[in-house]
Image (tube, rainbow, N blue to C red; front, side, top):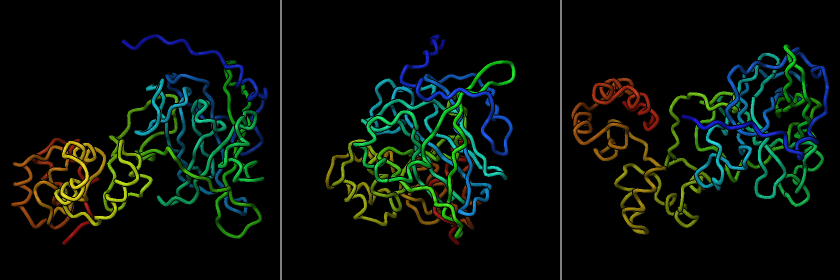
Length: 352
């Protein structure tokens, strides 16, 4: 049975955020988006909303806006982040696709203070799956530690466009909800008069899941497609490798020195020069060698979920495969549907 939790009262610190009003900000939408599920996360809930525009001020549709942040306790959902008081009922990241008006929205909570930084929410915008802007939002009325924060100061006067102002809105039925005034994200598209939103660092803590697989309601941990969180040994960045527990910068250099990896045996042999088998196995919980289904050895095939020696042998004996579709069809005869669906994440492009 889930323990009963009382929703905390609005902290005194957050009262500075409220600018009480009875009407929505003047822009195309006439109402806030509806989030029907009961709130499960701890903390003060609010609607983060905005527009994606180009430098001419025109809306950008189908832009994927991703956010990630701490929960109300100040903890990220990240392998290397301090997890003191982690709120398992908060979805620490999410994504929303802008509509024809460039509008996007999230239901989330005001993040907890973290590492002496101003309160902030990370965001990234993708167009056609390619990242075009990475930056951070800040809360206009809570800017403690801004003078000592190099990321904040690095934005200069452009930081004003990243500031969130929250207003309490009355909904039908008399209830109220806290919402940001629509914040404008301006992408460097074209040669218009608007200044593009300032770029800022994505880390040190950023998701190692596919944020696009998660919805825009962070106040509830919604059922999601199983996340594929392993790092490709041939393409992952040094910063991504640093998310692996106990890896260290020296070992990251070793990971990258032996590229390209063609088999998991190669990884075990080369990294085994520096650490014992137990530690190598621990690293394998976070990384993978891309699987060439027509050439990979049995042990490399056994990286795929549900594949044991017997299944690996059956797959090897059925080569060559015309493409991924044929390979995955045979794999589905040997493993359950969930494992078969996830297997594609490990595969290299079709080979003939």
